[in-house]
Image (tube, helix red, strand yellow):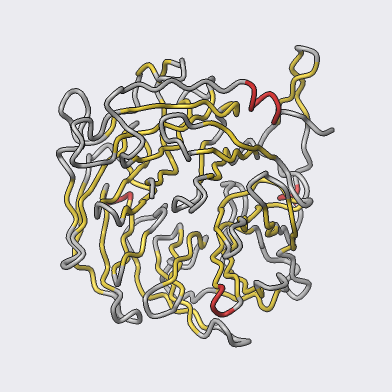
Length: 419
């Protein structure tokens, strides 16, 4: 049964400008956050990101999304030209398009759930035409426990098909416009790989070579590990190949590939949950090649950033961020690292070219850190001028009253800077 929750979403928004000194000409950080207790809603927080502003690091505005927090997750990785940002609650399978063209008054522009026959989108990347190409984890519905819907004031639990229990699980890619409408889609299913887990995790459009690079792994702990990447033709979304990542004996860096980023050498660098960096070349050929070129310690490494010839990676086991020089992509070299709070497990990194700063979110501490980045040396440092009311580095999401009228502790996941 279809649930018409988008209209309720749009009608229920509330936003209040919190700081009078923040003008529309300022520079901002948009943090996509959710209630840590899972009783409230996901929301966007607007934070002053201008280092020269007297309110640097302070909360300016916030707006509720209408999505009850289940697993606040990905936004787009960079602010799109049009100022309409896709943001997702993964476990609920719901996504909003947030209008950030007036940073002091953000609001939901559109909303959607399942699209094109696929559910549970994960990553959103812009195409040259301005549309978003999104990776969806499953074809049909995917079981994450249960889903709730409200009819006539009564809450009903709606069972969902456990597609991940079947062999050969796959997802898809969907092109979406800013109104949340599906324009075209394709399945990641590959008849030649009937037993593989082909749940699209992330993707990277490569318009200059008419390709889309897709990684496959599951967001659910109970699913088996992913180990493949796929190449699609961007112009018609035809699947061209399904390939195994390099898996050297005695290593685990290929396990559950996640984020793909284009390097300065044209190769694609993929971060994995196994904390490996896989470098993929020959992307236009019928047989692209993958090589595990780096292994960080531990597991659960998160969203990386490539700036110039530097790859910046969150490494939870180190409670910090590591910088690799990938000038020679086949032989990366660690050149810098910074350790954050020992209680903080870093995950998302988002770079701001305007101020040469890096925003970092993570787990086990309701805090966002701001780092400075030196483009000449690759050095990172905690920006101590970006601090909370107690003088502690970072922005504190714990137990505060938010401008949109909610009080509670939140955790941020996706963060992007204004243009």
